[in-house]
Structures are given as structure tokens and as C-alpha cells.
Length: 165
Image 1 (cartoon, rainbow, N blue to C red):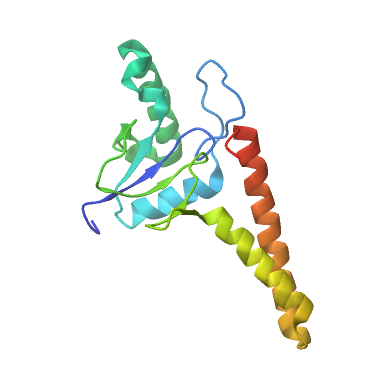
Image 2: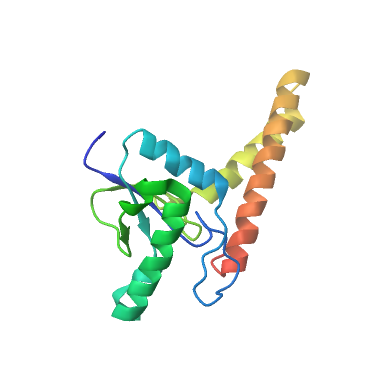
């Protein structure tokens, strides 16, 4: 084990496809995140599923049902290792990182959203692309700008869909 911390993964819309609630059904696996989890497990990194589906306020029988659904999903994706991945609704001081579709990443101790910094980076790249006399520098800046712009647009669309923008 690398250290005593752990990495958290949200369930719906992060490791399992989600577009609307369907009687508790868990969607198909989101392959890039499942691959990341496999990689972390191979490295011996402790991971946990962090989901509101197992929040105590839902009631004991509902929590048991959801834990059963999640466990089945984990075993399908990770085999026997899926039996030992903890499922929780809470983070704690030992959590190293949390992968979640709803979280807004903040630059530590600055109170600045990462997406705001990305917007500023896009604006700076626009200036470089327009002003640089070096064709290669201008081309690299334009390519980086297109990649960042597409990525940040996708981020904003998802935020609007969640009502957080």
C-alpha cells in the first residue's frame, strides 16, 4: 500500500452511465474511469465508492438494496476485488482525491474554480495565437486553444445540465 489514504469514485455518471433515475438500475460502465480504478487497484491504492445511494437518510432496507446493486456492479467490473471495495456515502480526512461528475474543482487555498483558470488560459492562448510572429508558436497556441475550448465548453454544458452554472 502506498500510504494510508484512499481515492474516492462516485457511482452514477462517473463510473456508471447515468442520465435519469430508473428504479435504482445502475448504468453501463464508463470505461475510462473503470480503467483508472483497475490501474489504482493494481498499484495497491485503496479505493472506495462514494455515493448518496447509501446515505442513511434513505432507510436501512433501501441502503441494503443499493449496496447489493453496487456490489453486483463492482464484481462484474473487478471480479473478486469488487467484493472488497468499500462503499460509503461520506468522505473523510484520509481521502486523497475524489472523482465525481458534480464536483467543481477549486485551486487549493485560493477559492478559484479550475474552470475559471481554464477560461483565462484560453484567453491568453487566443492572444498568443493572434500576436505571435512565429508560425509554429501560433499553430501550437491555436491547437491548444481549440482543445481547451472544446473541453471547457463540454464542462460548461454539463454544469448547465446539472444546474450548477
